Length: 460
Ligand code: P61
Image 1 (cartoon, rainbow, N blue to C red):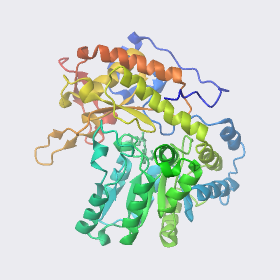
Image 2: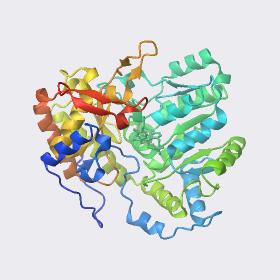
Image 3: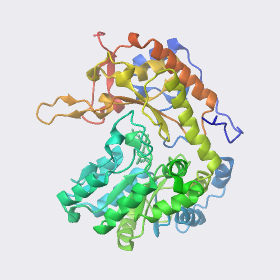
């Protein structure tokens, strides 16, 4: 592996509070063993999410000072629009304050009850926005994408046979849009190949169905295409992105990921009639069409961020830093999802603590220990977050995978921080037999992982 040396130097520092293990033990106990309830100030390394947590560059901070806060026609909007159009190529560009609003605006305008939206795997906000309209979010990822140890280079690919079968089953009239998430977050940040995008586009257009991208991590996906698809080795990431988006009809985007900003997003599409309707609704819920819930300065930061994210020195560092952490865990025998994806390393909790059954939340046991011992915040993606209730018995059905996600904020942590994380996990892994499961003390009716309170098994 290439050592991923940082392609930046540090101009401003944000001190991090160092807590003792004793303090952390009290904090996690008081938080009901729920990592979402720990004040961020008491966390040493925060790997909860890569969304909205990037460090902006000096160029982006300078851009903030050029914010034009005019209600209509801000100059930053035109910079933002031109930049998005140059990279994504779509005709109509609608700013929103984050990704889920782009999803909400799209689906509120095109879905009706009983419709079906196929994708590789829908992210949870996308799924929720589709289901809210009485429609079905259908996952059609290739089988390899669901196997944590399969080394397929493009585990985010859509299974074309599953897609064709869905169109035959439901009929094209019930499918107003086909989507694809790049990279596939719910499947481990795995990329989609250009070859697969061409195939999905062909199928969609054969039936006259629009094809949209969930483009949050598009630059990371394009970098993987450059690395892994021979045809693209000599192309720039910008050229790859331009070709990729040319096969689609629009996209939703959370700029909190590959926009390298802390807030922002957009919806883009070629269809004028859809864009007109959606813009009218945007004005109702977000704001005028040249700011969409953002300040002018935010639009400027996105415009600059979208250019910076295509810098190949940055992307080489970004993808290799994530891989570097994965490799350091792998070398210690810690079971992870392979190959390592773009924005996060996922630990396979089932293999890490096989003595803790799914109903005692094996992933959460690792998350709690990581905070207790080392002040690191990760997130459980397993029975606590993803279990589904059986509609007849009311019992929780655990998901297939029990994972812990270590999501890496962009340009925030150094490789030494990554070594610290790997060392802490190595220690916990060597002592893994001592880890104990948890049980629920309180849970809300839905999205329980955010606010549930837990207690260690056996501690009545
Ligand atoms: C994340 F636990 N992701 O990965 P918004 N599409 C995709 C995303 O990854 C995504 C959105 C759309 C988050 C933040 C997050 O329950 C949760 O700008 C592929 O956050 O609205 C967000 O973009 C939505 C984590 C969101 C969650 C909701 O950490």
